[in-house]
Image (cartoon, rainbow, N blue to C red; front, side, top):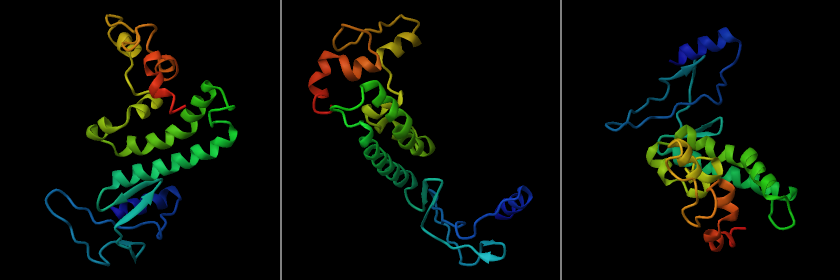
Length: 185
């Protein structure tokens, strides 16, 4: 397989980085494959055997790659969020809520959702907090349910019964969620 990748890279005119090309032993459900040093070669040189490596922001390891990738992306998203605080994303005397949500959707959520989309399975997706599902547009609100059911289901908020349950209503306007909202805003 390595020879195929190497031949393709030569045909297409790019170089496989020997310092970045590593071998990670894989443990399957049934057995762990031992890899002898010197077995894998790239351009005649031995490829190093490592327990973990990173490729385009995705952590790969011989243990739990998905967990480490998600944790690393949470750290990146947190750093990006702090860097946007100077632009007025801090809440009080800052940007209006629509602009703040737009900045979060543009700069923060892609970082958070990238690792999840690459490495998540159904079990992991169920564990995602509601606020992350809402901010990424993956939480099913009453307006979504109404549109899916061709309006056989009411789009009215089940908590307050006063308006359609949109993202803006759920996050900013619903009176029943006021107590939960105050500490967050």
